[in-house]
Image 1: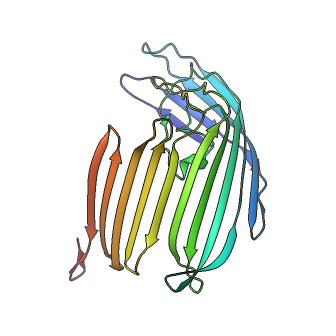
Image 2: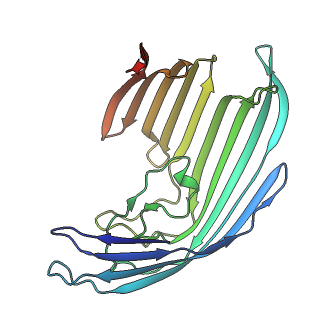
Image 3: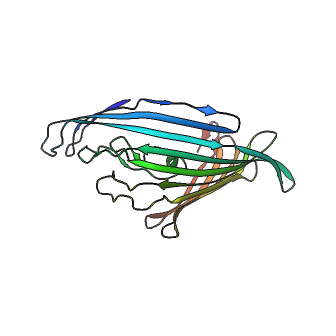
Length: 258
């Protein structure tokens, strides 16, 4: 649970109490896992008296049900004459959250969360606690890894993920249109360790509705030793940004580094 007191010279002021008690049952074997979870998200708002808003003190209670499960397959394989342990790891997550009208609740901090491999397997598509999405959705993902059979070090990882919606969106952020598609963008990512010191990664967010990439990220990291690292990255978001990131850390001598 959390309690926050919000103050701003011209915006809505007030306090918010959040409690999210839940119970989950992790069921796991060496090759499979299943975790059903049931909780209730409770929010209480106390709005300060002010001329900028007609909002009133009120509360919200929303039950949330989710089930996350997956399988882990392994096999021995050989690439370029080198032996590896290859995994195939499909994963599913189902979420059901009934609709609750939240149009008269203040929005102190919630926004639409960026979609990535972490957030796509989450219950709420909004950041913060002021908006909880209604949901009847299934997220499907699969990951494959190449592992060194002796050390267990991950040499290569590739993944795909997409979310499917079984109902139209009703809860949205003020000023942002509600979702109209029946599925999310497709996420794809790959990263690999080419040598002991060189690591590269690539990720793309593909808009299936318009058949074009929405986001692209490329990166290379050279790290020959502790405290020595060179990073080169490229990021692209359609109609928003395109930039190159360059960063480094390196010892300068006599206990100094830059």
